[in-house]
Length: 155
Image (cartoon, rainbow, N blue to C red; front, side, top):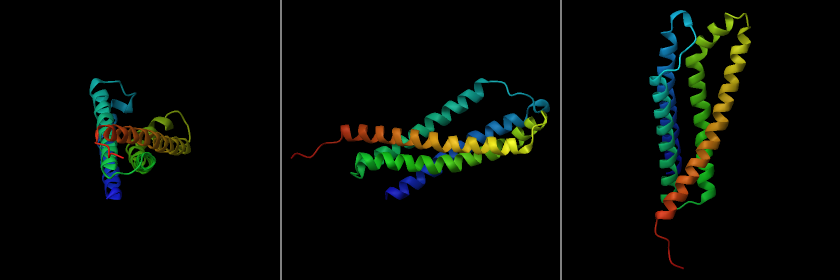
């Protein structure tokens, strides 16, 4: 049951990231001459919504693990593993969405294409690390919160 919850959480997180990336890539594609993107309220709202939904997924995972009567360490590891997988898959999807824009921008400065590849590889690596850390922390906090409200057996 835990593995099903983990799989569903990864799927939801990747879908959230992919939707956000697709919208961002569309905004980048609409720029005249592939110019510098401007900070806009719509983009910030989209990022905030993606963040809130992602936190909700990890929180739900922590709550679910608490309902399975598993321990804190397993809750932390569950969130971290979900974060690792979602960070890898989601980071890769995001990198694919922005690769063309980044490649075109970098090539205007005469920088080799390898720079784009390495930049995106670093981006994916950072996505993995941040997602694992945040996923573990949020899942653990949610687990603790759910456990704090559940009735304790008398000993």
